[in-house]
Image 1 (cartoon, protein in one colour):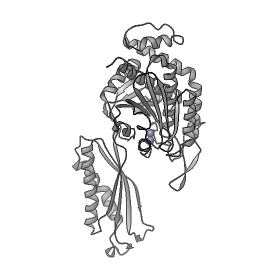
Image 2: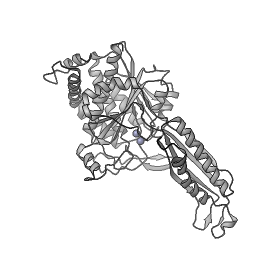
Image 3: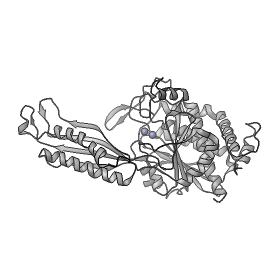
Length: 445
Ligand SMILES: [Zn+2]
Ligand SMILES: [Zn+2]
């Protein structure tokens, strides 16, 4: 029998009847139910917090009101809260005897885009972003993460006689720009505070609520941003012979760069380059002096990344040389690194989550988006990052078999998680994952 299961069940027995000691699997399944019952009682408060944060999102490094809301919640639970770590981040510590320090991370930020869900609690807020006014929306679902994070803290504090150690709950700014984790680390996250022994984070996605996707090893992609400025010689559109046409050069690059993916990279390895922006020219009859092309490069493995960066650079130089243009300015900025889930941390959590969620816990292939949670892992903290679904299982099934519409994914203006079952799954899964690690440590394994 799982060591923590019996006393936990005993403490939750007021809420859940007939909790009989039995095989570990059964105990954990009932433990999950017990946690859900605890969460259920507190759900109205979590729902109000979620809808308030959803309706009033804040963008990278502007998350002051959001951070203040979370700080108040954590202080009310008895956490020692430090604000403004990494500009707008916060660190909440709860000490409960000897044992490991376990970090649980949420993000604080929303996206510069308009929400079009039509929900009663939809965001209509606007802000200033790179010198322009923009709508703001929690279209990546970080508000779900925040509600689950507060719910997990409440549940773990409620069960504090069942574990020993320190909870380090952090709320990180600016995940979407890939800079918030770095900012917190640079501001002393692991020096002013104790470096955690283990860490967990979750992300929601467009699959069925109640299900959890996870993986050992690579969990998300390396992200690099690409900026190439092609320079030519401007002139009249009717006399191209007197010009060097950077629009033509850029167009060639945009097509030819895909041959790095299809001809140079090992086809069995993941690698993507997508050009997301082209800026050049002012009128139909003027060949401009220069064109700027911007894109994103995603890979899982460092060696694939290195090969792609070399090929992309060579292609940019070659297309310019073809037109006898000057060498282009090429800037590649490193974003988030791939998340690597620790096999030991995953194995410990997996046993308990499998027993609790059964076949709703699913190993899944790595995701191609990127995540700066990798910064904490690369700073030497063995971790697990997992995903939770947000939509009604029937709608997901209908979308899959074609009998219903496709469901909006993260970053869609229509992304609309079903709050209650999603947050409850987030709290239950995260609570069990943290408890499994405390329990494993207490048994000296
Ligand atoms: Zn996102
Ligand atoms: Zn996100």
